[in-house]
Length: 371
Image (cartoon, rainbow, N blue to C red; front, side, top):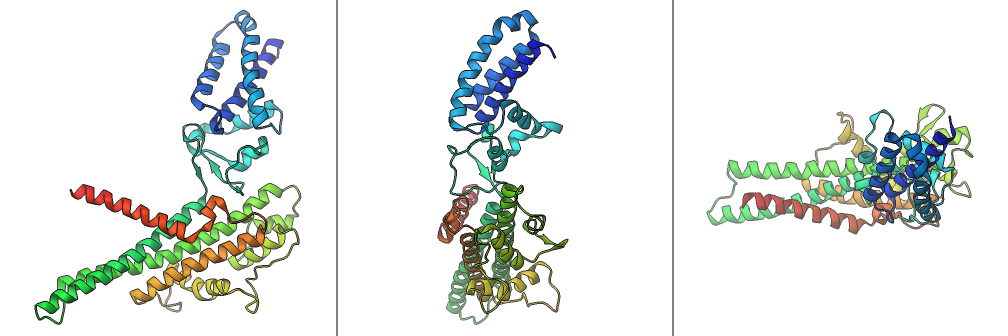
């Protein structure tokens, strides 16, 4: 490699660093830096050696100005050449990086993110939107949490519709001297009852799915950030296994605490009935079997044919139990952080209100189409 090529590579490492910075940083305009670095790339690609020698100092001065500025905000943890190489690896095999985003954990391995505050805690696998998607974020358990509250809101709303329609039709048939509904009304009531039980069952399945994803996320994130210092057995447990066998959810809750907490204790007990909190008892003793029956039913499992009122009550109760248990686990693992901001602090009323607002907006769409 000749001297000119070495200098070109150094300049391009700086340009690549700026492409990365502008892809996620609030302080940098992505399109401007993309255009600037594209121009530099095209210049290096199409110019002869003399033209490059005559301009490379000017290019370096421009790049150095921005590199210095953003290095003060997001200090590199690795040499720029290594960061540039790591960034370029994202684009191997035609992967749509700007569509898929990057993980927060990858970013913090390369840069000091002290000035990139998002929440009081950000899981390693938390995904950041980049480029035109900058400012948008995603993680699986957040999507499952929205699903769960969406199902709950629909369960409650459909039960209210069922009650209102039942009262309306009772009064209507009473006025005409009929004690029984006609076949058409019975069919409508049956359809509405199905909606209630369907969304209630899905509420229980969805909240269980959220809790499971949340627990797995806690374990995986801690593993990725502490891989170098963890024992092989602890790594396996944080992956959800022990001696090659998958761990039950209640076991993971206890074992994760013993690895994550400084005192290596489990303060949220899920294995001993005498020490379990009410929310843990309810989750594992009352609802886990109902969830299992709803997911893979058999005649020897819990009955899933319940009255609508019972289904809605169970859906509401389990939703509260799930959020309470999740918060207890979080605070047991991270007693000094506060509730997880990346999940809206697991604020029950906030999430249910958001779900109801989404339903109202969707209903407005339907009304608009009818008009």
